[in-house]
Length: 173
Ligand code: FEO
Image (tube, rainbow, N blue to C red; front, side, top):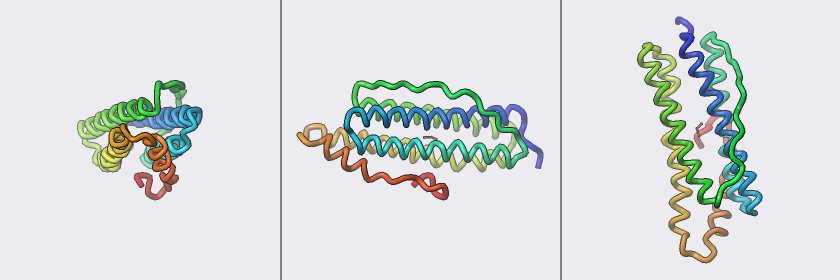
């Protein structure tokens, strides 16, 4: 099989950077939640951050497998302040929608190049992004459900404490 095109190699390297930024963003969101004494929210975000590291590593491994060269670049600093835990999750959803659009652009490039192997690899990420957006939306829905409950934030914080660390074998779980 022919190696990656230069354009595809660059696009996949850029995606490693986007996934590492995602990890950094969610870790920053976790520190904000910790600062608000919301340990369950922080737990959710730390585990989300770890999942993004697994995503980055998947692209890393794939580039190498195809005989390409991984070139790591500067990861920009994430924001550090939000107005509330709810805003954190609203921004997380926006970010996941942005990542979905990036994955779709990568798939369109693979399609143009008739690079079926890359398209196949990206199919995992296309499915994963459906889960990624749904899991953030799920938390936002709970905010709505508990909005009028006096102990709503406490209940939700406890609920989010239940998210466990991702495993390398099943990053989507
Ligand atoms: Fe790696 Fe949350 O997308």
